[in-house]
Length: 152
Image (cartoon, rainbow, N blue to C red; front, side):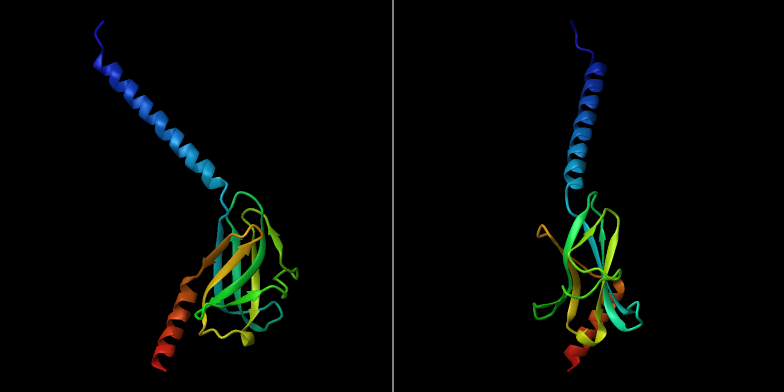
């Protein structure tokens, strides 16, 4: 019995599509199980009480709840400013459980931070995952700080 080239081409195409769908499904399944956080430091804001400060917002982009155990700012010298004992925006303290697509914001008093030394914001979870982040405004401020440090 002769082999029809059209049926072979259709079979190959359907087999390739099925393989591609399987690989994409596997990748999406693995991706859903990862911790994903968006960390955004923002300078020049004020606390709810009206005091000047620097804040770090952490958004949980995972499909499950995550417990944030530490929020802070990294410094140029390798150390960090960490928020462990200060209240968050809602008055609660860390560790804080953050549901999927929810956020938590930590305020750092402007008087206690040398803005020239801060580089990026970070958040650590209870499971040990750490995410760093910055923002366009934060990059602009840190670039100015680098320029002023180099000019000294």
